[in-house]
Length: 208
Picture 1 (cartoon, rainbow, N blue to C red):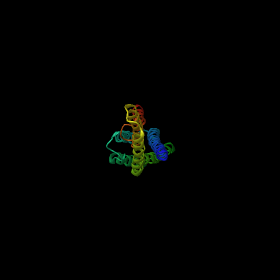
Picture 2: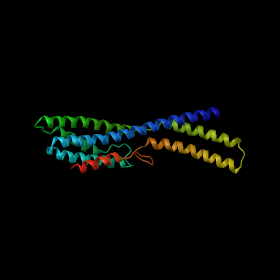
Picture 3: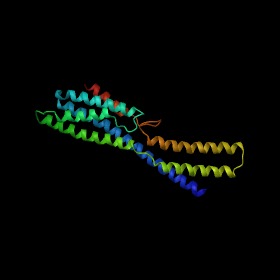
Picture 4: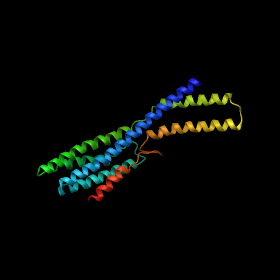
């Protein structure tokens, strides 16, 4: 049972570390997306009044993306509406006709930021589709059930032992629940906050 307990503790720690890294990667991708949206808006603002319609489309895309990430039923974070708006946004930036060096530089900066937004967007989608191997979770639950079964087999049958075993089982269950929640960062109780994108939308609105 000491060997089983050691193995269970090792697997649990690895799963928590993996889930935490995945959650942090999703959070970083979302912050990066919000920053790039603000950068793109500023580049379009520097281009001039000719890019006003493009800025409106960018704000619409940001609002759709925030709604998409807030939708718990959308597990993959792949909403056709946001994809269509992003493709339209890219086309509109490419269709701009700069009249001087200043506008050409602003257009080049906008296209560069669009590439960065695309990278962050696909990173969010890819991370949303990752999940823990089911075999790991099943094996861990089996080890823990075996371990607690052995404790109950040799422990005296009194209220203190039962309460302690239940509290320990609850603590371990909380750890497994935490791992599963961190892996599904776009839905559930523990979710990546969409505040960065909401703040980006607010800043774009104030800059109008």
